[in-house]
Image (cartoon, helix red, strand yellow):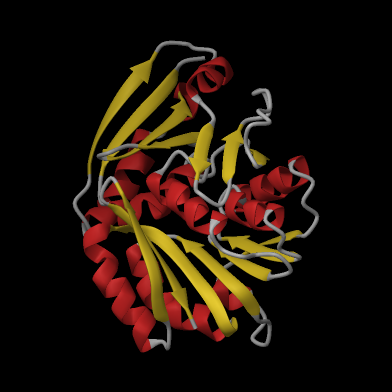
Length: 278
């Protein structure tokens, strides 16, 4: 079977929503790039008119350019296995290695995570996920309760449990991400991870958490940080990423206005991640 590769040049703020839209059009896998997003669909399932109509709707909100290429038949599973290399995050406190189920474990690392991503983002390959895990390794999560906002593969909630969290509630708007997070939690023997499909509004108003993890994007964070804070216990932590370094001042201002204080900030290849405390 031949595949269609759609190469999109767009703002990273729109990568998640375009992924969701393309998934509805039959696209099966996605890769973030420096320019935006690549998406893949079986050639027989490709609807050029529907794709062009969808892109046109978003071009009114942001600049989007795209190219469409027909790819020769490949063994996509073998291709994925060849290109998916384990990710290693090492700090003075601990280390974690993120691998797929076909990789052998490596006992040199403190924590071993098995993540089969399917269509979900969050394998650790992206700078924002890497920094979130880096922050987590230095944050005491023993006995804590955790909320993972826009959880994708569930990697951050799973790591929280590996670090001692007693409960981790994760949610995502995409059904395939919810299913993937549930599968990955099972692969890592983490029954403490609970997953539901929805938004922050689906979290019961009275439910409080010691740590809130939110690796999303600038616009969502600016809109929802006050809601995240409403679910934090006194002295709790909010850890965020998904935005560029030049957007960090806006994120910090919103967090401070919501009653938080900054603890530390990381940057990696122009992306940023910030840890706040209530």
